Image (cartoon, rainbow, N blue to C red; front, side, top):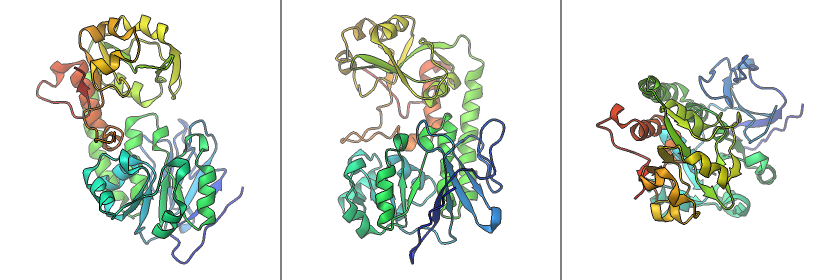
Length: 366
């Protein structure tokens, strides 16, 4: 086991790459911590063993196994942070700590209007995107923490460079969670840096309660609404794995995919012809990529317009809340509001269950 500790005068935490997780794992594979054991999230826990409060992040990359990053938390909250994903902005706003954001990656992808204004006015800096990060700007900001993510560990080389510069990176793996509430529960992990876990736990409990109540509302519906998911991309049609977020939301909303989904978390490609064949039995079509209209969807492939759900106009996409530059609030605030996404899906699939509600993130394509 190798532990690397970053030390400087204003150091916020120490970070080490360890072979073990805090408190071990429960029989179901969930991380356990003696301070906080997540109810839904698999990828983090909070521990106080040895008298030091520690946040452990487990397997924060796709396809990573037996990897744990441990962060020893200071009693002094970070004053300046950088967010490498718009979801990080949403988490900080959820726990009331958005004022500490000094930098973001890819300001054009933000939906939050207040954060957009802060970027335009120079109060928040855009530090670049992925492999084109502006290291000089990051150094000038002197953040206490850089919240980062990495697909299959692709950010690791950049993280090593940041470490050489004395900057601290905390990996956030909410996007690897299988359950929508597991993603939202990462708000508690963010709150642990500010010592405000109890407030975040209480707020998350309200979200979880609303989600579970909506799930119960749709649980007794029969039959399930046959649903087509996603859209053609190039020469393939990517569909979600049955263990992923999209499939979980569909099941909880009383829907059923017309394409038999593989028992895996990540999306995978099938042929357009195979998807087209299954699509004939779909009553509703959800999550159509970037399409904001039926015309845009039709342009994706010649077979689209002969899919029954398209002909009937029963097509919905999560594009109701988009910034002019393409920032999607579905992927931003939707991360901490899975109950609102579930409500949308129930309204679409079983409108009689929520006759007075309106859609938040989804839009019926015209």
